[in-house]
Length: 262
Image (cartoon, rainbow, N blue to C red; front, side):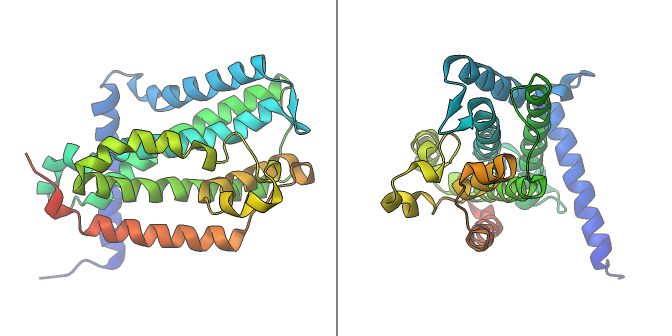
């Protein structure tokens, strides 16, 4: 029997993931012609709404930085992370029937779900960012490459979080109940609405353990340049995301025994 090459196996899994993404869109938003637009519309409503609200009720600048740009560069990554985490809960059980197919794996399922959340949030972010620049509430990034590096790190962190929590919520119902509480308790450590430089120097080390804070600091350093006084460590951000990815893959590869197939 002829064995598939590595490239053929890769292309097969690519087609599986693509089919899972299409199925997820149809299942979540329906099969109407414009149903898929909610992939963009849902995060757009959150991001645009919070940006408009904070711009209206808060001072125009805080710690010398424009409020609108602070919200856009913080809340969009936060939305990406929270949506990836939220959609990971019981993701394998919800798609358990698909695991009867030999080609479909738990990893494929979480890749498809995370991709939808990441691409939807990124499209919403581009629209909100463009509108803010067009209306004069934001300037173009001073260092776009650094901003994109921070965004890439945050995409990876969001995916890692989804991998880990998708597996853990299958293993423990208690953790599933605690997840919403965890999401709120972790807000101060995400970096969405605050920067490391605003903390007293003796406490900065604690907040800088957060991979989310690190990536958002990079995003803001790319947006504001030296004016942001950003604190980040690219080496730390690299290795902590690699560690989280390894943990997530380890848990995902061993989660099948906990999945109840209907």
